[in-house]
Length: 357
Ligand code: DAH
Image (tube, rainbow, N blue to C red; front, side, top):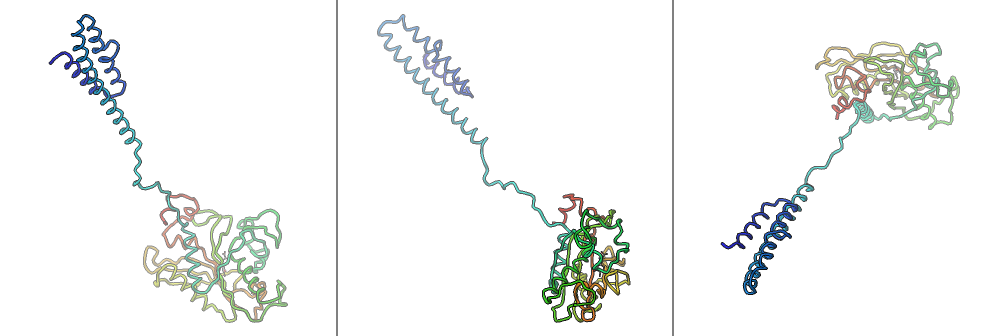
């Protein structure tokens, strides 16, 4: 092998070894640069005859061209490799699943309220909403609760500044004010008489029955494992010309069995006192199986609507009669899901709440 072929092979080997463009340019300088091997050979021709120069020059040029071809091929190869690496680094897999947002859901107490509304809705009850900031009149007085009643003490009630007997001055302590609000509106629809007058001008004409539930937030100065300053109640009211305690028993028993999805449920109506009902009863339920089996659990207050309350609805108590109840959706939620601390519902801990999705 002559010296030129050896140089070409050496150059090709050096170019192959170069892994970056900078390596390659350094390798190029060794052969084609000012002090490179080929340039040196060119310089060495000065001493040759004209004929020798011709043939030697042609041979050197061929070698130089071969080196340049290899150099360009390697340049292209390195550029291609760099492009491939960049494409690989920036690759986008469009088949990957997107980043998802956590899916929200309803609060367990909201689930209970929806359930209550659906069950009573199927029994023909309307659903009404009312203000959480109430007046003494709707929260107490109209509900036959005299001014010296313990429920009015500062201990139970959050009062707000301003207000008066008839202007909003407290956070409602129960949903019972909705009995009056809803009934008054209902009566107004069927009568020109809108008054709170005692015994006079009361409506006693023909009117569709009042059948309504009123779920919502209620407030009392109270806080422990089973009481929260904000809690929920759901009021129920059914007033007509022939509504009796028997109807209350039927409606509430049916509700409880549907709510807890169990016919194996016993109810007890335990005599009690509420100013706005007479007679009054506390409703207890008892599961016949499961972890709470055999225990009596209080779920609602109830009773036959007091004649004074019927009167404050604008109705004649000689003609109209009915029952009311007030239950605790928070308590029902605890029983349904086996939760033993009410505060968990209102702490906003996502680890607790996400279990109900
Ligand atoms: N409002 C009562 C309370 O908060 C519950 C109640 C009892 C509501 C008897 C009623 C009822 O409608 O008839 O303790």
